[in-house]
Length: 255
Image 1: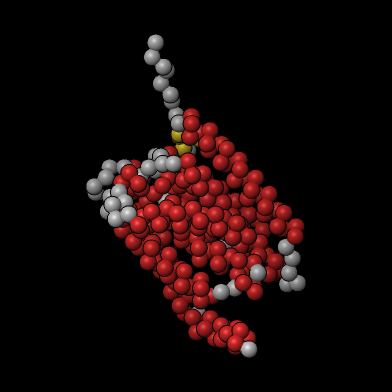
Image 2: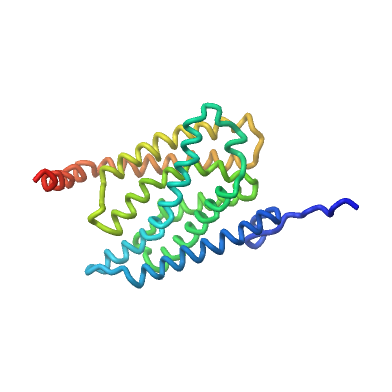
């Protein structure tokens, strides 16, 4: 007798369907993500204090970003290097799946959800429309599509763009680590230059590769590129202030 067909499992109240093996991975990854993100946040909330309550709230608003950006940057760099080092980086390299990529996307999706919920509850002043609601909803929709269509590797090289987020987050958590010029440089290299290169590669499959994740990926790439340009333009407007702030530090080092 032939084996019974394996039907997909409904996940997240029917919003997503996946195979039984991927469902088991998702349960494990989601459980670990919840434990790490929520456990770390509330432990940090108990310990982190500034004389100025506003700075304490600001630090809370950046904690999850710092916690998530570091591992995502490391993983993203691995995949981004493969993309940059392989001129023939093709459809099977992008629109495919692996265990690390599924874990990474699940963790990042959990971060987006908890950052939204905790942002509304604990740091609404620092959870704004573009970098909060628009960015998080946009990427949650993309992650849902990539998990369901088994094409999670498509997003992995893009996680190298979390490097400036890590720099900015640690600078807000610990003002002595603030490096505005380094943030701007890494933002330019990753979220403008690399993002443009990788987005062009993804969008090149729009007419040539019939895959349900291509449209969502292209829309997200284009939309996020617009956001990145707006954010970088805002940073450039403050560049004279950042340059003036860096001069006293250079003088102290030279003494």
